[in-house]
Image (cartoon, rainbow, N blue to C red; front, side, top):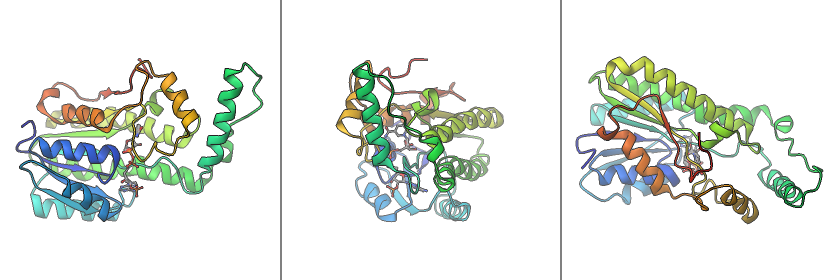
Length: 275
Ligand code: NAP
């Protein structure tokens, strides 16, 4: 058991990568608090847990500082501390984003490129992005990561021990033309990871990031077959990833196996980005 005596919090643990990470941590003996913006989603993950550890579902919107503080107050009261935080909660689409329209334009652009035509289709995502969408994207990813990290560090500093894992993305490494707000949020999370890693290293707290490539989850499910084909064609391993492959990376960064890693990012991406 790699996480036998550990208490972990996974945000956005009711779906996709967060769910796989929470279940993997539980299998490895951790007591896992599963957060989600929808309580029933978090509860479903806890029900699926196997192994010796107990799970606890807790609702909070990570973009809301009061809800985050309340969640950590409950966590401290019930469990007395925290060893591992996974800042995973995320969204791909902001309020009002025209996902279908952008998808259609992206498909048209792909066809123009593969047939060698001149560029007649322009994505123009940035110039049409609303303030509301920009703010919500940064609020969930970046504010959420900061709010949870701040509270977690206050608990971890009591023991001078801990591991924080932030979900960034290949979007931070390459830029994703269909989602400039998402790419900006994920890039900021990487810079935050590096700075906080240096800030808290003297306390024995490690902070690292994961930059997954395209992984099959409810977040990527709405991608059209053509866009999925374009992604796998650009991925040397020729496929998308599984949530379990990201969970294995998170387990490594959470456990003592990665005891000399801090301020780093690991990118399970099938070779989509090699840097
Ligand atoms: P997912 O299946 O949509 O799961 C995300 C979970 O977070 C959902 O349960 C979602 O609830 C929850 N959530 C959303 N906003 C929240 C908030 N404000 N507070 C608390 N929970 C919230 O997505 P995923 O693919 O597992 O993604 C997990 C993380 O990995 C995200 O940060 C994502 O950006 C990142 N990532 C994913 C991929 C990929 O290919 N899948 C690649 C790179 C990075 P709702 O369903 O109700 O919104």
